[in-house]
Image 1 (cartoon, rainbow, N blue to C red):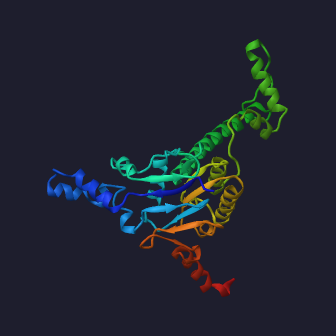
Image 2 (tube, rainbow, N blue to C red; image 1 turned 180 degrees about the horizontal axis):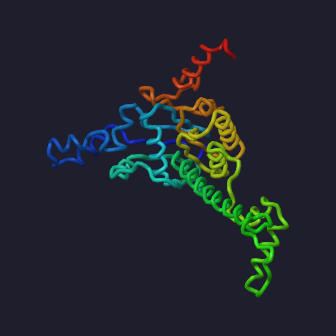
Image 3 (cartoon, helix red, strand yellow; image 1 turned 180 degrees about the vertical axis):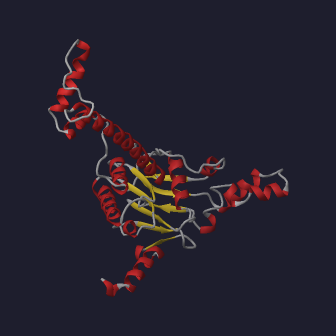
Length: 303
C-alpha cells in the first residue's frame, strides 16, 4: 500500500479568484504583467493541462518533455508534504499561497514516513562536485608525499645518509627516514595519506551510489530526473534498485523522467504530462520511447 494515496492541486476557479483578488486595486498594465504565467509560478501551469488530482501507486512516474511541469509538480508535492530536501528550488512569493489550495491523502496517519525526501539533479551534481574537490586535494597531497619519499630515500637528491639523532627533537625525523627506506613508495604514501579518495568511480557510478546510499527502507522518495549522469547500463541498475526497494523494502517512489529504462518499471503508474488532458499511459505509447523504438527498428539490419 502506498504512503501517499492522492494529491489534489488548485482548481482553475481557485486560481482565478486568488489572482483576481491579489491584484485588485492595481492598474490595468500592472495587473496584466503580474498575471503573466512566469510571474505567478506555480499558478496557471496545471489547469490548462486538465490536471487536478493524482492518485499514486508504489511507483508513480511523471513523464513529459522540457517545460511540461513534471519537476514543478514534484516540488509542489514535496513542499506540501514538507519533505526533506538538500538543494533549493525555484521558489516564488506565490508558492505558499498556491500550496494552501492543495491537499493530500495519506494511507497511514497524516504525515509521510520520517525519512521521506526529495532528491533532485542538483543534489547529485553538488555531490559530484564535492567528490571532485576531495579528490583534487587527495591528488595534491599524494604528489607532496611522493616528493617527500624521493627526498628521504638514499636515491633522493637531497637525502642525507649522515643524518644522526642529536636530540629528541630529531626523533620523528629519524623515524620517518627509516620508514621511507624500509618501505615501497606506495606503502609509504598510503600510510600517510589521511584523506580517502572515492577511487575507481566515474561520475555515473558515483551518482548511482548517491541514490543507493540515500534511499533507505519504509519511506516516500521523490526523484527528479534521476537518469542524469547515468549511462544506459547504470539506468538499468537504478531501475532494478527502485523496483526492489518498492517491492521488498516498503518504499514508495514518485519519479519525473523520460528515460525508457525507468519508464519500463514493472507496475509503474505513468502520468503523461504532454497529453491534454493529462492521462495515465502505457510506457510503450510514450513519444520518447517510440522515438527509440523507431530508431532501432530503422537500424535492425545492422545488429
